[in-house]
Length: 619
Image 1 (cartoon, helix red, strand yellow):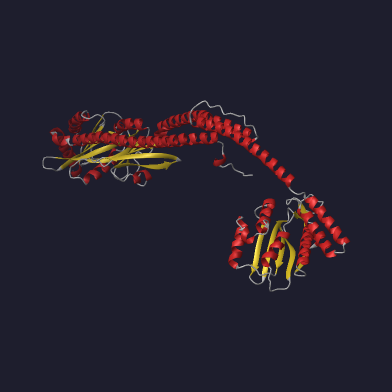
Image 2 (image 1 turned 30 degrees about the horizontal axis):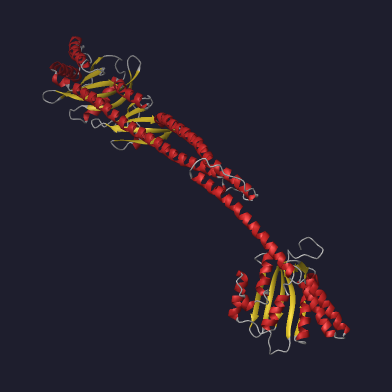
């Protein structure tokens, strides 16, 4: 029994159902998968494009703000009060440093106060020009500071910051220098972050008379990036060319150098995007670079935020697909039942007809293919019923004719009894030879009048062959010599009648060599499970090779020419066909022969079908 049911063996309703499901499920699944994938890709591409555009727009605003700061830093060079007061401050402190008694010279507080008021009054004006520039510092060449603070207080480490600013501005030739974000503590003891713009202040003769530094609180950038982070649901990071963090939405990396960090190292082009994993979470990083400052903004968006909408859409798509498949299955079941129910009805009717009920009729409701098939089925049943009736009538007539022919034949028992009377008469007249011949002929006749398909045993078949040879030797004295070399255990096996005598007769009438005084015949047996082999060998004239090939070929396919190879209407063909009909096509006769040497006929019988007399079980 097969372990798996092949598709070809499935019922038609299941085939139709499977076909409908595949035809609907596969296209819908492909469309759903492609749609969700394209939607996810589209969301990603639009997010990247929109984010880059927002980044560029934000950086433009930041660049404008920085440009304004740079412009503000140039104002002192155009205000005479600031320049004159810085010159006065430089002169005042120069005199104090040059005098050997500078330590004993009293401070001129009126002069210092005048200088301070003159500078800081102008700084207050400058501080109001740009929102966010909450700290403006002016220094003379000796590092003395003047400032105007809007909020947050001044730097506690102003002297340290001055030397840093001075060092950065030293390399410039009077242009404004943009400095990275620094962390500082104000005099109000609060920690703050600011990026700065510094510039040297020169007089009309281009001599350096001081330094201006403008601190901008990072809240300026925070205001710009908050909208971006809110839209993208990510976090932004701004770094300068050296990798110093200008701003960080998460407030973790501000004023720290991240030049070796993976995020910074992957942002190599002017703008673009890339994926990186952090703490097991996948992030999409989108970046853009300012053409003005060279600052780089990198926005990190969790992929889960990007896919939230995609997941919802995917669910909708797959739910829609599932509903469509479910509806398709229901429709497929209805259609398959509508198609296969008439076929199942026809199958049931065919089984009924097979059992002999020819009164069945297929109900034709529609004129489709099934209806046409049903109409033809009904016509076929009517025709079959007619043919069976005709065959029955013909068989009846045939049996009557055969019975009449049998009645007209001479009764074989009458012939046997008549031969027995003749034999008794010959014995009474002392003609023993005639009596013996008639006795043998009677035995042959009695054995032959039985049904050819009745079974006998091999021993009785051998006796029949011996009687036949004895009768021939009466006609042709001592011309034939028969040797039977069959194992006694084989003698009790059963076989159908008259298989050996026709072969012996064929050997004598077609193989007799007139140049030999005696023709030797030998019968032997061999058991080659599952075959019982009976060999009949003669030393006659043999058969030509070409005829032998045709003979064996004809025995295999049943096309032996009886005119050439048959005897008395029984012959080799008849024996071969009887064996095949009784036992199967794999059994029969095979002939081997050599011209001038003799012929061997081999009967192949199934040992499994041969039985011991009185035993009903297969051997």
